[in-house]
Length: 189
Image 1 (cartoon, rainbow, N blue to C red):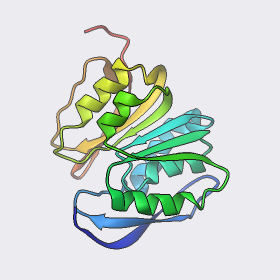
Image 2 (image 1 turned 120 degrees about the horizontal axis):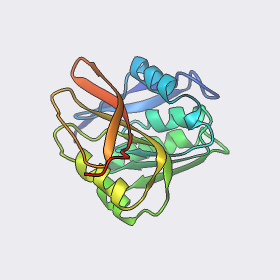
Image 3 (image 1 turned 90 degrees about the vertical axis):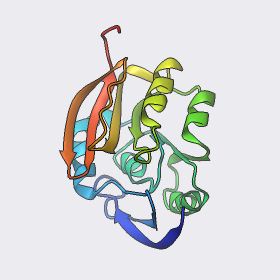
Image 4 (image 1 turned 180 degrees about the horizontal axis):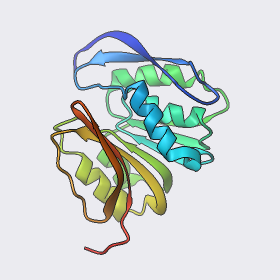
């Protein structure tokens, strides 16, 4: 991944509202736009307060750090790219006193080794990498989510994904991006 000059995105709500996050301009890195993040957190509402949050495929970290800003108890950021991890590490230093853990690792490997249950999970894998379904399957199979957990899922609008064990609560499309809230399904397949 060839990185270019960094740019910034800002946190839009909570304790750290207005905080600028430095983000690499790199192929495949698409920070979730402010408008979409605002919609997500309006839908999630108070579920983020006191939650254990996982930002898998963290990229800019904007989703997870927004959750911390809005009262999440803890955050695990998982990012495979070393340059992104360096920037995230520098950003995390500004969140003194917050429980934030940065893991530089392949997302699927992390899920295979993880034993923590999360209340809120952000899944925004690189488009075309075919990582969404395996990640969802691992979250379910390894009991890393609870029946009450909320998952934010982002993918290319061209993607058609149905994963046994999950149901879509709400879904929207904005240009080339499809995003929605998912949860474990109560139906058996």
